[in-house]
Each structure stands twice: as structure tokens, then as C-alpha cells.
Amino acid sequence: MNRPITDLADLLQSMRPTLHPGVYVYASLPQNTDVSALAPLGTFREAEGLTVIVLEEVALRAGLTILLRSAWITLTVHSDLLAVGLTAGVATALAQAGIPCNMVAGAFHDHLFVPVESGPAALAVLSALQQHHTVS
Image (cartoon, rainbow, N blue to C red; front, side, top):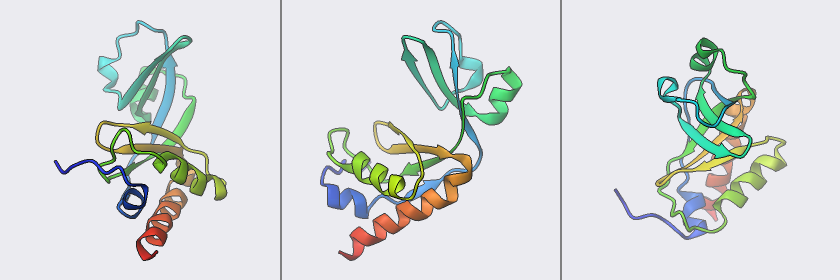
């Protein structure tokens, strides 16, 4: 794996956003729920419960209450966990387009979850942001 990038300009010009197929949903479960059968893409423990991000069809089969239907976009650049400004730059560009986003940092990449109907528009905004920083 290549070295993680910390420089904001390099991160923005190397984002290479990718829209994944499928619909991903947020749901909340009791703290000690065994979620292994759900094969969650992500989980997060909060005082109120265990948040899971799973494929919509998995959530429906399990009878979960869906809190958000979303499209999943990965910024395929290898971003450093200590990099400053990438989240702000991406969130600002999407906010200016009226697109809400929920960001999750992985060890190698950043992941965005936007309303499912906004997936293609969000991808276009992010591609334009990358292009703007590539040209500059």
C-alpha cells in the first residue's frame, strides 16, 4: 500500500470518488445485539445504542427500522488519519450543493453516506472539486 497523504491540495486532487452500487442504511440497535449475521459495513457504539450501516436488503430481511437510506461514496485516495481539511473541504462542497453527508474515516480511505437520491449529484460535486484542484 502506498504512503498516506497529508497535504490537503494533494488529497483534493487525488480523491478519485467512487459511488458503490446498492443502497446502504443506518439503523440503531440495542447495545449488546449480535450483528454478525448482518455483515455490517460499519458500526458505532453510542450511549443510546449501536448504530449499524448495512445493505438495505439485509436491514429489511432483519426487520430493522431504517433511519436513513443512503448512497455510499469512497474517496479512494489513501488519506492519512491525521490529515487536516479533507472532511471540511468535502463537506463544504456538498453543503453548497445542498447535499447532506455523513462521513466515516477508515484506516485507508474516507467514506461518505449521502441520501440515496443524491448519490449521482454528490459524485458530480466531488469530481468537480477534484478537477478544480487538479487544474489549479
